[in-house]
Amino acid sequence: MTPDETSSGENQLQDEGAEIAALETQFDIVRYMRRKCEEYGLKYFIVFTLPGFEAEKLSAYSVVSNWPQEILAKYDALRMVRHSAGIRKLRLTTVPFSYDMREWIGESSEQADFSEVLDLMNSHGMLIGHFFPVHDALGNRGAVVWGGESPTLGRDDRLMLQMISVHLFNRLAEIGAAWKSGQVVLTDREIQCLSWTAAGKTSLEIAEILGLSEHTVNHYLNQVTRKLEAVNRTQAVVKAIRRGLIA
Image 1 (cartoon, rainbow, N blue to C red):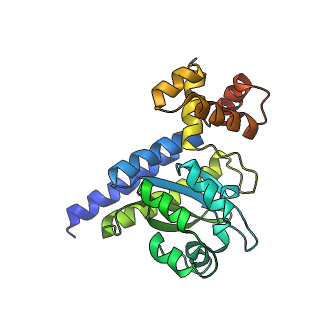
Image 2: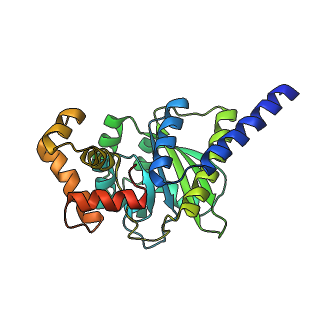
């Protein structure tokens, strides 16, 4: 690498760090991570604190994510967090690594049948995941996982995503994300439905915009209302805005 290339890389690191430091809410971080996925040819991301040995649901440790709700629900229903080779490896290393779900589910096939999850992940194009172990200033451990279909990342891309992941995890801690079970985490679809509700759209209008059924939209909005312990959708919108979950 030439001196000019080194200088350019350092400047990019500084620029990314400054941009992440300026993010004010979890919603800002979700939008930032979506943009990074596009830049690096990836599709999905999830940030979570390291689950304990007795953990049963990954969603209880998730901070932000754009995983499809059906996949996360199935993952939790099968208690896959207890069988995950990725989670086990996170407890042993601080070095980034990648995984192929087809191989890891195959390794766990003797313990349980995870074929449904594998089929779902395959249909959504998220069989490959790139794990970046992270920790915050207080020593809380976790991971940022970027997923998609590409089995490899270039050296420079991996280094950049590692730095980005560390900054994101710490920024989430600074923003006030709770590192405990019960953290209010909204899925990508829930955020979309709630955001359009905040914009004054009806369930039918949201369904047309997102290409969903009205029944599905109502399901997402009811889930959001329950998660935020709101009495109705209007209060859910207000609570979500105050928490920085939607703009």
